[in-house]
Image (cartoon, rainbow, N blue to C red; front, top):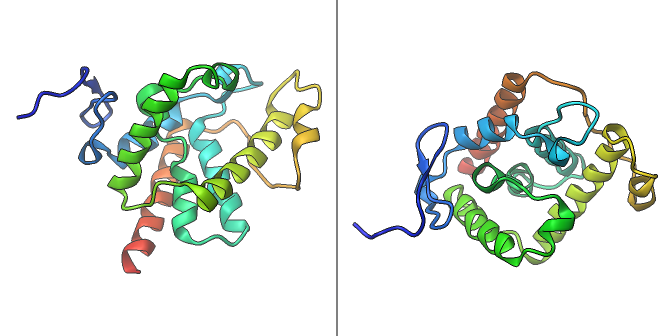
Length: 188
C-alpha cells in the first residue's frame, strides 16, 4: 500500500485524507451531513443558515435559469470541499494560496467521484455567477451590517429560502436532490 500524505480525518461514514484526497473516499452522505451542519458567514448571520441550504439555493437558481442537470449538480456540490477543510471568510481565503491549492485538489476528487467535469472556463463562470447572486441575496436577508454592499452588487432578482430550518430536513433534501440529479445523469 502506498503511504499517504498527511493524516486521515474521520467523516460521517469513514475516513478522508484532505492532503491526499482520493475520489473513492468521497461519499455523498458525508457531504450532505457535513454541509447541513456548517453555518455560512462563519456564523455571523442572524440565525443558523447552513452551507447545504446555500448550495440548494444555488442548485435551484441554476435550475430556474434553465441549466442542465450536470450544471445543477456542480452547483449543488460547489462547496462540498468545506466538509473536509472548512471554509475561510473571503477576505482571508484570497490571501492564503495554500488553502486554495488544497481546496482545488479536494474539489477535483469530488467531481471525479461523481463523473463530473472540473468546473473551469464557461462552467466555472456560470457556477460563480449563480453563487455570487445567491450570496448577495442571502446577505441582504441574513446579515446585519451589509451597508447595502450586497444590493449594489446584485445584478438580478433571485428567489431564495434563508429561513431557519431543521438540519436533518436540510440534509435529507440535499441528499435527495443529489441522488435525483445523479439518477437523471446516469440515464444519459
